[in-house]
Length: 210
Length: 210
DNA sequence: CCCGTGATGTCAGTTCCTGCCATCACCGTA
DNA sequence: TACGGTGATGGCAGGAACTGACATCACGGG
Image (cartoon, rainbow over all chains, first blue to last red; front, side, top):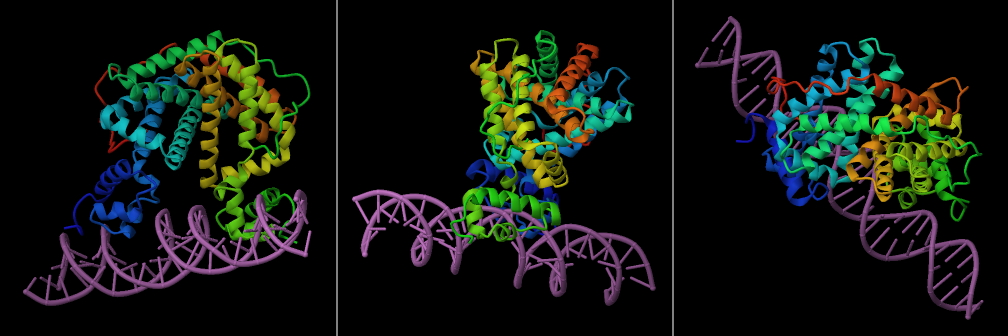
């Protein structure tokens, strides 16, 4: 066995999720994951570019699903198109992963800084992809980026409520709820925040970075 | 020289920004940065937890500034409070860094995947901090997270316009503009996106991850 | 003048990741 | 059947990012 057995990437994914959940991400070496899958460490890096990516390879499929839906949906507003695309991605994700596995994975990712970092990167790439899809529909780039960012934040809110909830509401329903919360928040906000007319406040800022 | 010279972290920051901009981030080793600063590689890791962090240590000061402003601002809506806090952070950042250095740094960060990843992590930490500040003011946690996320997206839009613009508008002005764009986008959006009533679409999703 | 404290240097070791080459299973073809 | 091509894999060497342990040096106080 081992050599020439089918679906090496799938076995590596399963082994990684198991071991990371058992011992923790940092306490598990790539060699451990490969051994559990009956493969060598070198082969792991032939299927995944680095140790984190073994947990994130579905993001490309989600991105493709969302951008396709944005491009196909009827031309409404930019934010509406972005939310419609993410709704399609939400139903696809819900069907492909399921609540229980999403919960296990979310617990693992949020408990490890290195994995949270990669997840935020995927988030940014998804937002950029949505923005490009909106721009391809004629939306000006700045507006497209802002609309995509707002939609992704709304999606994140829905996802958090989904995995943190009691399971009575699906991800798509949570997205509708979050969209309503978005509208309510913006409606009740003061139209323009006071931009602090005085000079730069005397904050203890050294070389401040964004 | 070298040993016992003052401001080792500052020298390491300057050396890192220089070398990363000259040769690129990946082509520069930590030993190179330390040598340029007249220090050893081991000392670098005593001042910064990893190679990326040498470019991001101002984020803690920004976070402190923003959360303080959120806590101090008059009790308006959650989104308004978040935007007010980020406006205070914007003016502080603008005064402490300046457009030219922000441009150099932004070009370096956006051109390197590893650095973009860390920047997204800082973004998420800032959003979480704002959400905690809102929650401390009595805002329910879910609403606080959504409002903080919206405000940070708006801030990002303003920041991108600032470093990408012609220099005629300051960061604070860009934030006012982005806030207006936020309100306009949400106002023109359809109130609720159609949540795709059919079954899960037959997308080619394997183990899809958020 | 000596000693404690803190920043630094040096060294060894682990892990992540990469390039290079040999090996093995499968598949089509003579 | 025998043979060569193709693709996935294993093994090895090595670089770079970190980390722990210990020695060393400068400075301030007694």
